[in-house]
Image 1 (cartoon, rainbow, N blue to C red):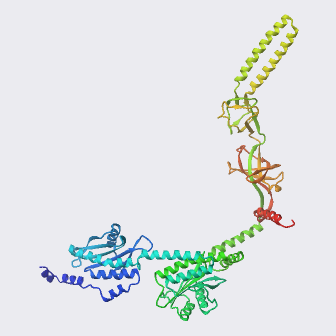
Image 2: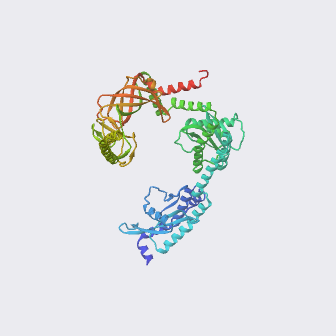
Image 3: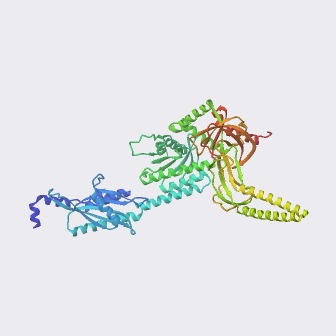
Amino acid sequence: MNSSSEAQDPRARLHVAELRRSEPTVTDWRAFSEATSPEAYAQSWLALQCLMIPGCSDGVVVLQKPGGQEFVPAAFWPADEKKDRSHLAEVTERALREARALVNSREVPSVLDPDRSQLRYQLAYPVKVEGSLRGVVTVEVDQRPESQLESVMRQLQWGAGWLEVMLRRGQFDPVEISRKRLAFVVELLSTFLEQTDFEAAAAACVTELAAFLGCDRVSLGTLERRRVHMVALSHATQFDRHSNLARAIEAAMEEAVDQRETILYPDNQTDRRLVTQAHAALAQGFGSGVVLTLPLASRGRTVGALCLERAGNYRFEGPALELAEGVAALIGPLADMQRGNERALPAHLATRASGFWEKLIGPRHAGLKLTLLLALVGIAYLCVASGVYRITSETTVEGSVQRVVAAPFQGFISEVHVRPGDTIKQGALIAKLDDRDLRLERLKTLAQREQSNKQYREAMANRDRAQIKILASQTDQHEAQLQLIDEQLSRTTITSPFDGIVVSGDLSQSLGAPVERGQVLFEIAPLDSYRFVIQVDERDIADVVVGQHGELTLSALPGQVTDFEVKKITPVNTAKDGRNFFRVEAAPIGQTERVRPGMEGIGKIEVNERRLISIYTRDLVNWARLWIWTWWPGA
């Protein structure tokens, strides 16, 4: 029945024939056997698989990226990267997540009848090495029975063994390649740093590099005074620096350094326009079929070059070229650092000056040139322009009359009515001391006076003159004592001596606390009379004289500037933060309504008019004069 239906539908017979005719050719097998890279190996392998699977229309191989955990496509079939393969991406990502074989299906328009739909199957098989997922191969096939799908999955399973063999050998294993490169770079770094001499370190380094990359010769040169001098040659502890070989290698290095480009001779890239005459002479004159020269850079400048030579049939491609470029990027800073450590101080300074001069007169570095030009213009302006020289110092506001309120006698605090910052009127109650002891003392003294008066009257009645005089003296003593107690009672109430502001003395938390006679309780300053205390550094005090004017800006009033005049310079200095300061007193000029004692700010005393360059370099010049005076012999 099936044969008759196929005979009746010629399109069906044509489609079956199309599915059966796809078979690998000799060229496909040769490409697989001669693959030299992971991408070529995966591409040729996928082509064989898709050609051996009847009805296969699409395929992709995803492998682990070298040096990381990401998975990237390594091969497509057909080899068209722009083709929409979103249907394969979905099942591939799922197989990567679940790490197992999967079969998925989707409906597409039928090849035989566009008005009808048919199923296509996507089969994904994971590639594992020692239980670790390394990739996934996914193909899409036409609709077929389940038994044939199992045959396709077995074909993928058997074919994936070739990928596993490739990864197990390590030749194309991305993880193994990355590990070997990293190990070599670490070993090369260790070899370079363990040598104390630069030339010995360079010789060991180029020898290691030649052995790892299979080079006939590897040489390293340093750039000195615009000429490259070869300092190390692989497999040679000593060499003739004036030999033809050394000069040819140095010429090739200079060719790469002058063009600031990596030069590969011969180069297959026809779009590059580089001068390679010295490389051609080196390759033809000394038997090197392939020459690769890489400039060495450190901190944005060229410090030398690295030259690698191979036989003609052993080119620098892919991983070898990438590794050489990475090693050059590593050796450049190391060589510059090692050479710098061996130079004397004059050589260091000369190198710095030379590098700066090259940047200044050479191309590029527009930012440096513009910065230097602006600096020169700024210095010229400072030398011509003038301004007012001011001495800047920390300033504190004090009351011109600052009254201290002290305890009149020993006692206890009973009441407190003010705190620091309160404004008070003259005669206002500030605080009160406990007077209970004084009042009891007064009652006691009154009783004693009454008793003395009674005895005095009895003596008068008895006309006892001696007793009369004694009792009269006792009565006078009691009277004096009562006056003293009354005076002390009047002093228990402490009032303000004038209108002002309480500067210090917070006793609100000390009710009932004892006080000693003469102990300072409050400090009061007037509201309409202030003075500014300027702490002038001893290095500037010589420029300050009485009568100079200045300006003060307080931290509490940054938008208000108060003028002042210097009134007094005290000859006594105080030490603060390891420096000596003199106390300079100044009187404010103008309104000081919002100014309060205790405020701090920055005061500037105007001295005279000077050149701006003199103002800004004054401290440096004074320090230099003092240093020269200290160390100058015979001074």
